[in-house]
Image (cartoon, rainbow, N blue to C red; front, side, top):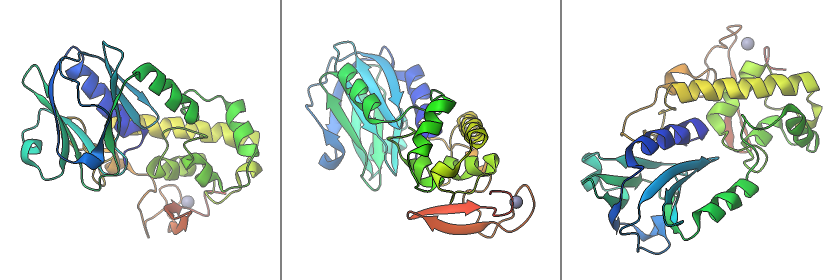
Length: 266
Ligand SMILES: [Zn+2]
């Protein structure tokens, strides 16, 4: 599942490739993955933005595209394999002769034409919590103190903190030395500080690696990220704790796979 580092990787790559391009056509191959009007011919792309895991392609007219990759979506530029791939759902044709492909096996994601993209970005910003780089320690602490849900659950709640998914939640809890099972409100001020530092550090690492391709995710050029080679605890069933060497524990927290060391994470 693409999380903030994956979506940001795609955003940066697309910004380099499609800003200044003009749209000359759109092909919807699967209705389920498309919404809005199709009259986007002659729209000129002036920006590629991201809020949480949402991507926004902005047009000079004030309209734009809102895109969410959800579980298995890919957004790939100028890669011939996607022209005929069975799971290519939407194709945006560009004046340069290149195409932007929205590909998705499970089809939970979408491309949506939005009439007022600025308002849409604001709406999503208001719906989501702050991003790990923007939230202050005090604000984060206040949010955690309001709930007795498990701390890992809270990290995944996009309305409290935007962009953190299961991979980076598992790894940052290990880096911070905090058990994923702790009730959020039991965290001390110093632990909240440590956790915020750990989340930022792990997300930075993910971003540097171009995201994690343990599953379906590929970047905007159709290439794999490398963070899956750097997982700290995520996915390491029966693996060893990288800090103490003991066997990692595995269980499900609210249906999501959770790996941790019950010696190092308290
Ligand atoms: Zn350990």
